[in-house]
Image 1 (cartoon, helix red, strand yellow):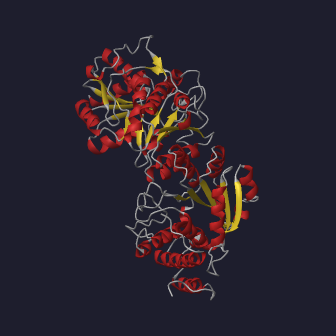
Image 2 (tube, chains in turn cyan, blue):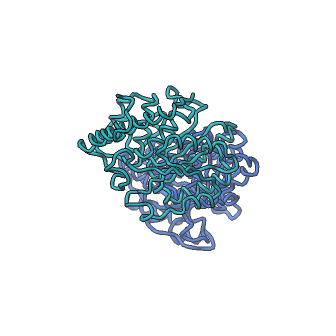
Image 3 (cartoon, one colour):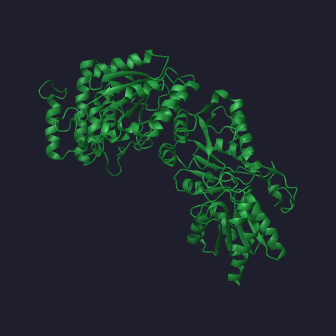
Length: 285
Length: 328
């Protein structure tokens, strides 16, 4: 099953998901707004246009798989899942609370539809590689494995082990999406541990690289569809995003990587996202 | 024990049949692969050393060579398990689980993925390579993880059965293999299941709990003790976790003195596990034979190291004597 939203509907959905991310984090009192807001367009495109999946049957044998390597950005996945119908939206407000299925970092066993337990960084690509290898052995290469990876996360060596293996085995039913937002906890990525020339790094490891504006939902859809047509090499999409996208005092600021907004900040953020600074209206209106 | 179909051996004879525990495991993995098409192998540039080569030759399509990348083999394994496969991932124990403990914790144990971790060249039997390669902490590391079963076979015949039992177990397993060669104690008829401890020799004065290559040393010790009219019960504990508490407590109650013997750190290893069990359930005077918060070093033969670090039959027998002196 595949929901295919129009570009306009995707933009509205991403906007709603951003609002829910702010509400979740405010109630939880902790969490990671920067990458969660920044990836809202990517997760919206995946759940509402690109992926074969069935919210009523999370273990559906024909589903595409989305591995979230950057598990700290769980709120964007949770919000997208709730909107897609995996669970009631009200459950979003239990994030990080005792007894909740929505753990601070995602746990597969707790929440059906989460494909991997993550949080410790650097191990999503290799798990996705194992899944792609498994699908090849099962002769199910029509199923796609998507994996989102943070850019700071690329400091982890495990990624580069996986990048080599995926190229070696030509796992072209796997699409990697790097959330290139240029920040990590300690500061700008190029200060903490320079990643550039990131494109050249992936290319030299045998990958085909697509670079897009990761906050342009149409560009995300187009890039993934293009990636599916490339069969010679595995494809990575370097998705340039704005951390904290949609909230002016969070955008580009690494201090918002892992701090939740307080009540006033959340109200201000919601107003901004709700209206996109007056440019569009939410479907909630 | 007649029903265990152990080899009737003179443990001090020179003509013991010797074989590497890893060789038996390699045969067992091949058997598991023949029996179950879901079994796959993932290796980190040590395919022949870990004896995954038999499987790799028989099933090239089900074998992944990941290169020297231990973090990768366990996580690729987690991904393949997610697709319904039963991955056996292997390297030297010093590197896997030594280097990739967090990945095992998160992507296999917490994530509940059915991956089998095979740590070869564990312990002092990796003698010439020195301390870097002599994994002594692997059992401790794996024992600390929820959802992980920890296995230490005593010989190549048992490790062969163990590979098949692991494929059938449905949960994450760690198995520790020695480079060998070491004496063969069991036969194809000797029962093996994941879980039970096996009484290899009955006795009444002292219990010796051992696994891996130390089960043989425990039998040597029991032989020595018999000459001093001390009746030692030797229990082989191939499953360190979950521990067979019933068998161990029953024997501890009977003898009132317990010696553990393992070829690794006693802190958190078999000795630690038994001390925790008995401390709570059946306080019993104990001695733990093994590595005591120290590293190994190079030697031409394992025997030199076992003797130097006090891990041979003689030292186990001495520990039993000390315990019995206290008892009297």
